[in-house]
Image 1 (cartoon, helix red, strand yellow):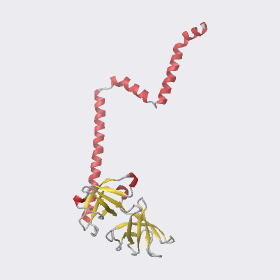
Image 2 (cartoon, rainbow, N blue to C red):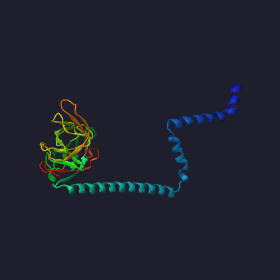
Image 3 (cartoon, rainbow, N blue to C red):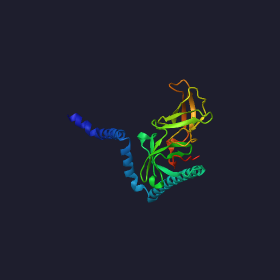
Length: 249
């Protein structure tokens, strides 16, 4: 016992130092260095000048203003594109922003920030740069719900612009759709453009819909073509709404 006490008297400082180092290493690992960073901040805080703090705040404010300016410029550019698109159309459309889009129904429907007070009615046609987007399915005084043509439940009468062969197109819950032909041997090939047909009861004829990516003539019960939708369904922010029987081309 006496020997152990003498050893402790001689080496207690070394034991305490080793224990402190091990404890600090364990704490740093457990907190991923957060505790050491806080300790550093506490120790160096008295030495930080007010000028340094002010510079950091100024830099942060500048970055915030730059981000806001970039967003305003982006919105301004999109508005210019939307106005240019609307001015190219023959019919008088109603420009409307997209204010709602559920993650669960991203490719199925959107909510517009304009409704019956702006003149929008059920079954009105919705377009965007690129072509057809969908149709209005419900309206409130200040909002409208739009069923997108990318929704699998959507059905659009379309035809191949080059050969005039017709069929029905349905969405695939992405930026593509499937066109099922009425004829057994349609004249269609990759690169052809699909437009709304004259037999469509929901949309005016001649609206751009998309471009053929592939063709399966052996598909049963009818030949099919994979269509890449021309309107940017994934990135829509503004659309133009038209009465059902008005052709916006």
